[in-house]
Image 1 (tube, rainbow, N blue to C red):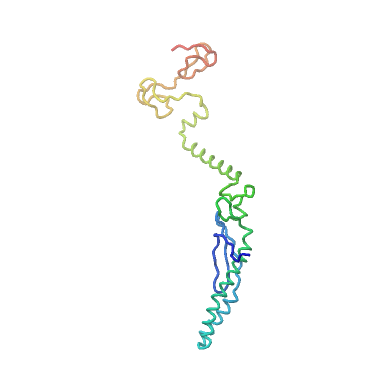
Image 2 (cartoon, rainbow, N blue to C red; image 1 turned 180 degrees about the vertical axis):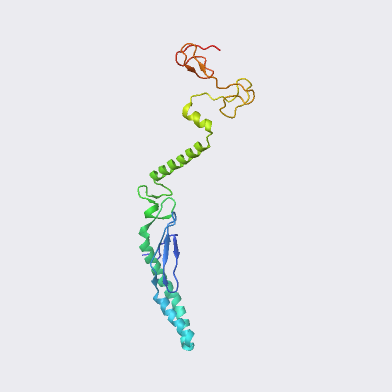
Length: 216
């Protein structure tokens, strides 16, 4: 059996000489889980030797130096054991996406139905709701930017033909105007069918109601 310790790239080591602690972080949402601090017996013993060496020197000082060398090896061994235990404790709460290889939390960032992280396979319901909200915002801005005469036209006379230029002087028309700003020509004269009296669209050659041909 391999003695190698499995781990992901989503952790921070908070361990000190006094003990061991680790935190594991979701690489999508940033949510983290931190293990409980576990005191190190090796670190505690080393601290006692350091204190004795500082107070008395001599043989106690030599003991302190020996303790440092022992601690280096013993602390590393204890650290590896603590890290392995922490990883085994936290691992069930995280999962590695087979597509992007990110370690993500199962609680918020894992799409169980698709077997992928939500970065690679977003929840369709969430995306649809977000798309609807975005579209609503776009419509609000579009409506707010619409000129007053255009709002009225859109609500009441949406079938009305809007001229781009004056039929008399051919000057371009910037708005849905009633008169030409260049020559004063009336642009919105109301015409009626000579046969049935129905209202005619501007420029109509035949009545939309009775089909009668219209004369100039």
